[in-house]
Image (tube, each protein chain N blue to C red):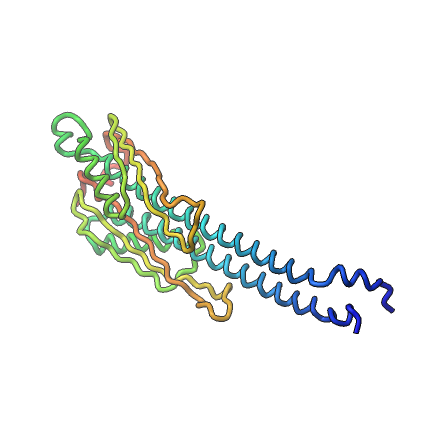
Length: 137
Length: 140
């Protein structure tokens, strides 16, 4: 047996191994960046929702305004969000703090590999002060 | 027909696997750096958002100060801004200079992997200016 006979076929196997490893690393990076990016987008949406909520005078109106703003912000940023949840904390009286918590399930089915979940739940929080001096009702 | 001399095969033997290992290790290092940088960037956005909210909270007309002919009460402005920072779970400093409220917020970065070389905390600064009068639409 010559040296060429002993090496025959090994390059193909190693190429398959290398390509698989490269794909795994690439999918991991894409997933990680998508999750971190989506978390930042949800945080931004929560902050915008908190500003909208702080301009309202009662909790139901604040809930409606915050949800609409958050949905718009997420849509503008291209976040595919399922099961959007918006929770308002605070009574909206002048000078108090309103807290908006947003939870969103981000679909990752396009970058899924065997053994990894196809979605990830991310959350964000927005905090805003209700104006100490405000007019209206 | 194989025209390559045998000694060429001998020189190439075993070269693919080390190259693959080096490539995968390099890619894993690049992935680690990319993920850590992304998390640092996300933390910076969050801290900056809290600083901006705290500055807006501080830069509000104060009822007592307005009755006394002024606009902003420094102690009340600092208390409002600090309340926002504390609610977010961060620490920060608030300063008031005439009508400008400047807030500096520091927050820790939660890395998914050990990240030596990356900052463990991020500081962001924002400021807001109190403006007297009504700038919006009448009755808005």
